Structures are given as structure tokens and as C-alpha cells.
Length: 280
Image (cartoon, rainbow, N blue to C red):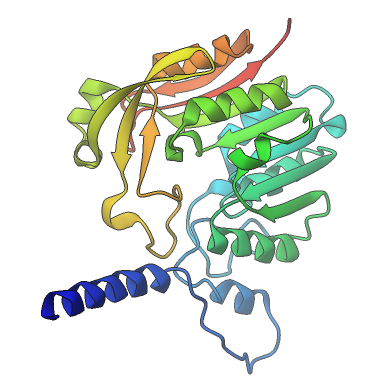
């Protein structure tokens, strides 16, 4: 009986810790309406520093609303006003905002993290986004039945997935134009990286739709469930090597790849920014 109670208490404690990062406290605001009131619902979770005229508000400090990756992408889009965009994992909507500023026709942004989704809605209202729609759910599941898009934006999501090659294959079915920013696995660099090395425990061979590749399992450990956590929905994800990331894009029909940058020695870990197109 004692052992059973200990196991039950441990399970309750684990569940409570999990829910602590997911529940919103219901409060009533007694001050006049303001943008800061809305931002303060998620105090401590914000990553981005807001753009003018809201830059003085208390949110995050990341300069993501002026992200050079999206600026670079915008410079390579033909006739952006005609583009219908699918954005996978908008996080807080900063890239969504930048895409709307580029003048695209529409943006559907799909976010699986409930707090990130709600932060997107706060910013949609605050920044008065007109052509963006946010939906709560898993973008990989959506891709399995999705219609076509002129552009898919997948910034900071592939390395949070359990099956990243499946996502690339599904994206290839819905678009001829795909922007990716992603970390990738580089054995000598990751193994000597002070923040990354202990997160990788195993390697496995995999195959999806005819493409054979390696998966490098990354464990979130104590980060999962923390306030502001920006990662996958499982306790682990799989990273691809640079070779398999590029190889899978080519295998699934993206024959024209333009690399924005490739930073194997970045302080946050190896990462690459690229635009992949199908031209034939």
C-alpha cells in the first residue's frame, strides 16, 4: 500500500508540474484598458521585443520583428501580393507580422503550443494584422490533408519534430516554394558543444517514402513544460544532419536551393537558412 501511495503521489506531482506551465490564472483587471494589460497575461513568457510604436512595452527582448532571415526571404519572393502562405509554428507571430508587411495575400499560421497560440492572438489584435489567421493544432497533421500554398515558411520547427523528413515530404506536396531555418546535427560540433552535447543520447537509421536517413535523438529534459518553452510536443525530437536535410529536399523535388547562410559554429548550435524551390 505504501509503495502504491508513493507512486500515486509521484504521478500527481508530475501532473501538477506539467499543468503548471499550461494553466492560465483567471484575473480581473481594475486598471484602464491598455496593450500592456494584454501582454502581462503572459508575463515572463514573451521572447520578442515588439516593433514600433509598441517597442516601449514590457514583453521580451529578442529582435525577431526585424529578423534578417525574413527580410532576406522577402527580397527573393516574386510578386508577393499574390502569395498565399502557410506558416508552420509561428511561435509569437513576429514572422507572421513581417510576412504581412511584405504584402502577401494571406497567411495561415498553425501553432501547437497553447500559450504560444494565445500570444499570437494577443499580438494579432495589438498589431492589427488583417491578412493573417492563426489556428491551434499540429501542422504536420494539417499537411496530410492540406490544399496548395504558394509558399510554406518553416522557421525553427524541423528540429523539434520526431519525423522531420515526413514534414519535408508533406510540404513538398503542398508547395513549390519552401523557406527553412533549422538547426542540424554535426557530430564533432554537437559533441563538444557545452549546451547541446548532453541532450543527444542515440542515433538511428530511418526511411520515409523511399528516403533513407539518420535521426539524432535530442531530449528536452527539464526544459519541457517551462513557461515560455518553445519546442516540440514530445519529450524528445530528432535532428537531421546537414546532408540529410539538403538530401531530403532534393529527393522530394526541390531542385533549386538558395542558401542564405550556413553557420556550423554558431553559439546556439549548427544552423542553416535556405529557400528551396521546385522549378521542373
